[in-house]
Length: 238
Image: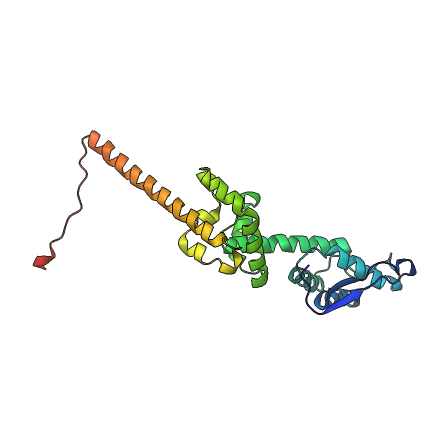
């Protein structure tokens, strides 16, 4: 979890847990969790003195997620808590963070032309394209950088080995789409290596187009079909 400089400890309230390490979370996350305990009441299985323990368990459940995701989910739970009128369970919060993370990642990939649509239905893809860009800029940048860093060697190897149909979109996308990816999203030397691969890909596509045109011309000629030459306009008389 991305933690801001301001952190607050959340410690279990029960005597049996006094030796447990203090779990530190950002002030924004602690505030969001505390707000839920104020907006809703403990479940029937909770005692009033379970509040701090509930806070600690929830903080532990979401610790792996980006702080922006956690805060957004906690804000949404204030008005969309399926456990209302009781506290949401730690699992509720974890699942909501997991769903939010997946959605923001997909939105980021849609926005920057990197989405693989195989795992999504056509309606879901249309919806994501319509709402692309809802993820915070800092999350987008971190997601892009992690994706490029994790896939760089594989994407370059597939291209180098001739698997053109399996090329990563970052190699085949239009120049204006590629240019929209922030330079800060590329790890060291990654941008230069990808640009070199894109150049080779574009050259290969152009060669294929030229070969296809030449083959078509030879075929028409063999069939006795004359290819009309473009008319050259004489500008001297105008």
